[in-house]
Length: 274
Image (tube, rainbow, N blue to C red):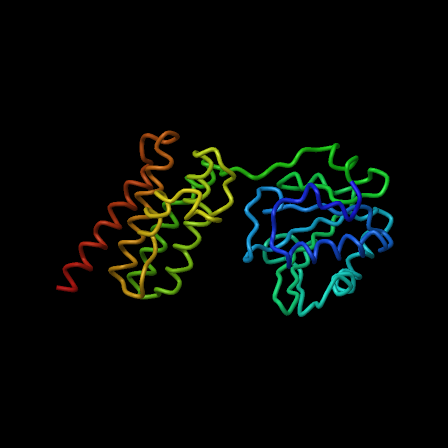
């Protein structure tokens, strides 16, 4: 495949296509870049005006880690770069998250040494490479998306629920919002999607991928009052018990005691508010 071959690209907005064509004209001329691949919605399909563009830039090992110091300059050479920052907050310091425009366009540039491309969660589509370098590197391993660890979650979940209940009692409701979001993103969404045979990537597009579950998940969203937070926490607990019922039929003593605590808290709040 040549760098300007669009015949295998999925449908995408013209803004994205123009950026990608420009990137594939520039990047092969950058010393140390051995290949360019696309991931994310380029692989799964369904790119729209709100999609970002995920590009993987394979780097020759001899140019690593010096390439890391050049990343922002390389990003600026691809278009009108407004700002960029690295992805430590998502556990991926090799990632450069970029905003171009106007018109605004979100681009993720993931710089990966050819020695390290085995650390990937999907199989990106190779758009250009020098002497088969990227293909050879990908063939040495398979992508592996992390699956939910039921035991890890079960060991922690009821301690989390108790902790959140105490925050509700204390009135620290914004702390509660953070915890409920964590439950949806790290526990409930992944467990449901894994059981449904889909990639368990949090709650990405859950409204269209699993509309019935998304409706149930809506019950875990709270407003800024204790009663709403208690209802949402109860909904999280009930959903979790349903999702893991085929793995853990009998509740642990921690589950029993925490559910009793939650029930007592709910009762005390109802009585106190009357």
